[in-house]
Image (cartoon, rainbow, N blue to C red; front, top):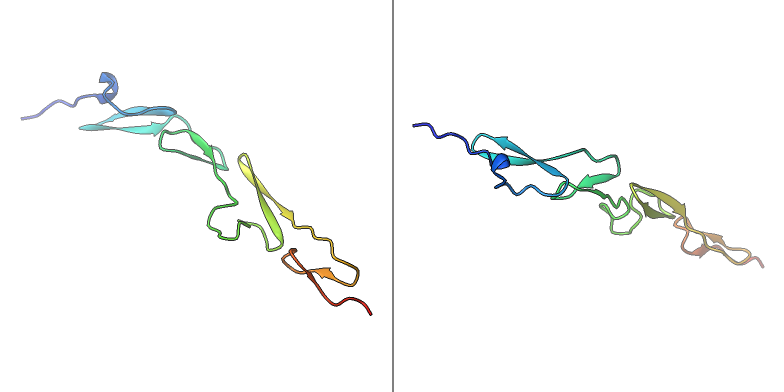
Length: 107
């Protein structure tokens, strides 16, 4: 005995919201994004494009994809690296991380 498929999209019994659209499937439905997100964004559970924080992705130090001695600055859809700046007294120089002064004072 065959049972005809109920179109949840047509009957509005689906749970798709926001930037997603209902697509009927045999015996069910699925929510698919109305559009794809551009680079630097990802879709949330509702299909909305939200900014990816590249600076916090996968790092403990907060440098993200930046080299040591640089700070990662998250921007909408991207990021940039800013070299840390430290002013050292005469005879000293910034270390490789840019967060302390090394060397000995000239005598």
